[in-house]
Length: 147
Image (cartoon, rainbow, N blue to C red; front, side, top):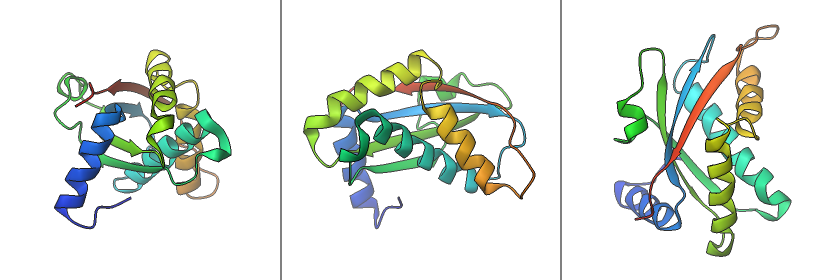
């Protein structure tokens, strides 16, 4: 999702941060789609991952992904070949935020292997020409402290 203006973008980030739904991730892989297509794939994967945590009842989830790590420790320590992204998510109601945070922490503990890597792989493969595959991808995920 793209911001209409800087003020709405800042408000989105603040709201997501208050819920604990902001973070950064690093991707490493081969034959990855170019930017901004890769950013779109990451957004689709993050949205699919969070929806998988709560099922079809999670309608209206908004996810924003930006290239760059947003000043995170994860992005500062990434080596060459790693691509940092920052993300923020807002659920339709704050009541489900704790379940989403718990799911993201689980994803972080398992390097995205719960749902995120499979969602990302599917999104990337759909973005490539027929017959091509993006190869494997490795993920590191970090949630920012609540603001």
